[in-house]
Amino acid sequence: MEKIWLKNYPPGVPAEIGMSPGDTLVTMLEDAFRTYPDRPAFACMGKRISYRELEQQSADFGAWLQHSAGLQPGARIAIMLPNILQYPVAMFGALRAGMVVVNVNPLYTARELQHQLVDSGAEAIVILANFAQVLEKVIAKTAVKNVVVTEFGDLLDWPRSALVNFVLKRVKKMVPAYSLPGHVRFRQTLAEGAGSSLSRPELDGESLAFLQYTGGTTGPSKGAMLPHRSVYANVLQMSALTDTVTQPGEEIVITALPLYHIYALVVNCMCFVRIGGLNVLIPNPRDVPGFVAELKKWRFTAFFGVNTLYNALVHDADFPDVDVSGLKMAGGGGMAVQSAVATKWFALTGRVLLEGYGLTECSPVVSMSQLDRTEVYSGDVGLPLPSTEISIRGEDGKETGIAEPGELCVRGPQVMQGYWQREDATRDTYYEDGFLRTGDIATVDEGGYLRIVDRAKDMILVSGFNVYPCEVEDVATQHPGVLEAACIGVPDEKSGEAVKLFVVAQPGASLEVEDLIAHCRENLTPYKIPRQVELRDELPKTNVGKILRRALRES
Image 1 (cartoon, rainbow, N blue to C red):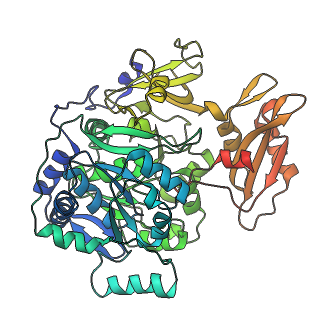
Image 2: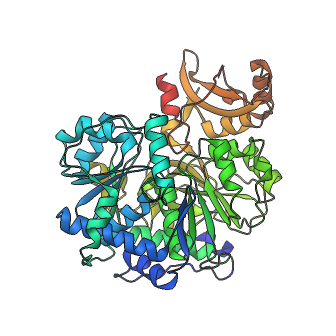
């Protein structure tokens, strides 16, 4: 479709980004090393490492991969770590060595871990000791030959490093016994790598950087092939907007979402490394009191999260004491931002919660709200990024009209190369003209503003009428007694499907189902009103905080 959104770009934002074939994440990183050597790059648990230290440590780890582990460019390296300092060191070290990073969720079961290691062909893994027993169960069935084990405190200063490791292992019993013969400690890899030199491999924009696995909600998870070009392009696309408010070498971003997830990996880590920013790593944001206590230590300038994370913060009694005076941008993605959460966030911070949209296959961002937006909640996900094309298409593959819903399709430099060893799945995901099918139902208005209606697979069909769960959930969470909500379709003899709503009540609230249904009746067309309401203490979520409707359907 015509790029009608360009007319609403702020002054100075280009329609297209500029890249050369030799631009890679490694050249971006090397620029940061040269420009900001003494600036802090990452902070975690009271320890900071500068860009100079990151340069040295990542080079040491990369050299270890090349020489001690004997791995060649293109080898897949699995990283199974939470947000601790070892993650950026290992990740950047692998990229600088010309290898491919396979991000692994540390909470994976043995079955899930085996699938990802076997499917990717990973030859090495960096894993937190807390999860090493899971690897022990499956390693013999994989191609992994090099195992690097680390503990939480390994890169902290002495004696804090020893204290943290002792408490987690001996006092809290968080490190189950494991047996991985021949494994190497993370600090040992740095020491051995320091005795070698990192060889700079031949890389270009099409060299594979990440195998980023999708959630597997419709079958076994698939590895999206993200080359250096796609990820770096997405950094430049977002930066075309954010560079209007950021100051190189001065920004502090709170990184609470896990770096193994594409959202935080690119939006937090890559975008802010490019401008010499500081990523404050939060290992466990689910410990909300501890998270808020950490926030109080920083005058941060950027914050990105998912709706559930913002919801937890705005309902924490101590969050109003956090200093948000330096906050330039707060963004929500990964799932729909709900109006009740956006409104509460604005009331507490005076900052608009901006919303964006993306998916793993697009490295990940497709659109984002303009930074000067003043409307507290609009329901849209902003405008497509520079160099991005979108097309809203019906079931026949033809474009729909303005404001007419259809499947959102995307074409641009941030789009993946395809799915790893899944030619059929790759072919099914693209139209012949190169547009990627996202599986999301969307509309676009006259100004080019994109609105995500829902996931196509989550749509509920009631007597022939489409019901989109996001709309019902948004209405439900506007009830003062509701903390969280999720809805699914359930079989119904009369209407084919009916809406079932799952809710978590506000702490201390006396939530009556009849009152909630009455609230929905005032705000929804009759066929959208929940027929069933189930109160729960909590809702199933991914480790990123996205509510799992699939798990609700299976329960």
